[in-house]
Structures are given as structure tokens and as C-alpha cells.
Image (cartoon, rainbow, N blue to C red; front, side, top):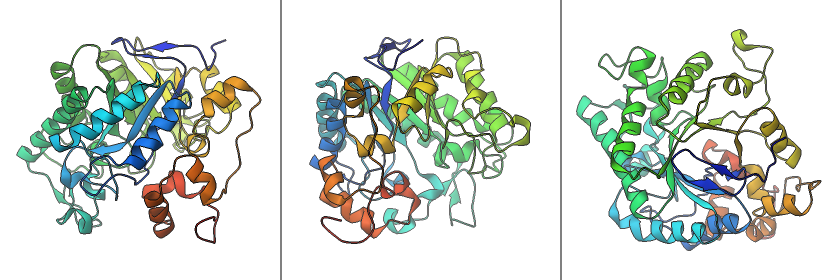
Amino acid sequence: MKSLFDPLSFKSGAAMANRFMLAPLTNLQSHSDGTLSDDEYRWLTLRAEGGFGATMTCASHVQAQGLGFPGQLGCFGDEHLPGLTRLADGIRAQGSLALLQLHHAGMRSPADMIGTDPQGPSDNADTGARGLSHSEVLQLRDDFVAAAVRAECACFDGVELHGAHGYMIAQFLSPTINRRDDEYGGSLENRARLLQEIIEGVRSRCRPDFALGVRLSPERFDIRLAEMRELAQQLFRDAKIDFLDMSLWDSFKEPEEDEFKGGTLLSCFTELDRGDVLLGTAGKIRTPQDAQQCIDAGADFFLLGRAAILHHDFPQQVAANRAFEPVEPPVTADYLRKQGLGAVSYTHLRAHETTSHISYAVFCLKRGGGGGG
């Protein structure tokens, strides 16, 4: 039986000391220009110090107009390089693999924050987004690749392309949101073309041992499970990525689509022919037993979100006590501060606790009260 603490190597050569990966958590702690803050640095390096085999950043936007939320870490300009380098060095110094998630919010970008209408694959009346021109799609592709090159220059071990949760790449993958009539719309092959071209670009411009992953979600946001299985199988077959990170909401829930009833969302992907590409899963993994269940079900690694918010040293706690019981939320603000949450992030959480952008973290806060919660 595979252990949570077995080492894991990606086919490109990067390696994790164990199966614990920090999920890309929105934490609202960087500066308004996208440069790294001390709070975000501490938030992430504290989890690397806490024993995670790989520490992934929050979603980091590849274009200024791709901003998704306040305090988002940027990777769209060389002005971000000093902070990104400091962050990568700080994570790697703790023996954790340093991964930067690349992101564009697309039609989910708040117009009042980006100063213009949001963009998407097609015009969207509900969000006020305008469809990208063909040349803008090519620029978007190139900016994702340029951000990956920037991450490599900053000494990150790899990047993950955020193709989940209804953001830009996922919007292209949707058969209802994407209504383009060029080579980036129509069939699944065409709707996945942007993602595939970004993968090709990263592989051609970054060093061979630079890890490359993709995050997908198979339900919600006008995404079809059958298509995501087909896309996942294609990514496994092509073997141009190191890992596929499936964000499943709940790794062991039953799929919503009738065709797949009777199994779990996770089993829809573990049963595919994966070749040398590793499979990770995220979704309601709260305890060591949940994590082991994911590994026993066929996942190669797992990503912790809420559990990692509540315990920056979750892996170390489990290593010391396999029967470790995580704290149950809600918790006080003082507790979250001890887990590395900065004052700015706490203020945002209290002001925006109904917004979906911070759904990972806000549930942790005890209602009522200020400072001490």
C-alpha cells in the first residue's frame, strides 16, 4: 500500500518528498500591483516549512486585465520577478517543490478593479464581457507562456495552468460559454486548442526538467464531465504535462451526470490510462484518513486546501501522529493569524465573506467580533 509519505517524481525530473501538495489558495495578501507582500511570503513559506512536498501559490494572473480578486499575486511583468524569486527561494529552502499557478479570470474579472470590461472567449451579456479577437487569443496564449518563462527565471520548479472553476481557460473549454466560430471554438478539440498551444509553448521555451501541470474541474461552470474525461485522456496520452490536478469539490462524491452515476468523481479519472503523467485530486480532503483514501483509490498525490489553512504544518502533524484530528471550524481570527494569515487578508475576508473568490478561507472564520473573533 502506498504511503502518504512516499516520495514522488515527475517525469520531467522534479520530485516531491511526500504526497502532500498545497492547493492554490486565494489569500488576498499581495499588493495591488501584483507584487509579493511579506504576508503572502510568510503564508506560503510557512506551509513549505510545515512539510508539504510541493507548495503551490495562489492563482497568479498573466495579464493585468486578467485580475480575479484583490491582493492577487501577479506574474505578468518583470516588475514581479524580485518578489517571485524571493518566494521561490523561500519555498525551496524548506525542501518543498515550488510551483506557481498561472491564471486569467476572463469574464470573471471585476470591471471596477481592472478598469475596463472583462474579456472572454465570446461576448457574454450576463457578465458584460466582450469576446477576444483572434489576435487577442494569440496574445493571451503568448502571455501564459511568457509567465511560465518568468516563473522559470524566478527559480520556480514548475507551473500549473489554471483550467478550472470557470476562469478563462475553462471558459474556452465550455461548449456554452465559448461560441467562437474560428479554430478556438466549436468542437472540443478546438475549444481545448488554447490550452494545448499554451502547453506546447511552455514545453518549447522552458527547460526539460521544468514541471508543468494542468488543473481541471469536471462539473459546474457549464463544463461537461464526459468532455473533461476525454480531454484528460488526451493530456495523459500526449504526455506533455507532468501532472493533472483534478479539482473535484468532493473527491468521493457521485457525479451529477446520469451517465457516470454509481461511481465517484475521482474514479472517473483514476480509471483512465495515465501513462507517465501523475494524477492529483482536491476536494474535501480534511483528515489523514481522507488523504489515504485518495491514494488507495488510485490518485498519485492530493492537494489540501481548507485543511492547510487550518494547519500550516498538516504533514508534520500527520507524520508525528497518524491519528491526528484536525481542528474543526469555525476558528478565531487569532487562530488564523497563528497559521500565517496576515492582517490585510483578514480585513478582506471580513468585508467580502459572501464572495466566491475566497470560499476556501472564509468558512474558517468564527462569526461575530473583530480582532480576536
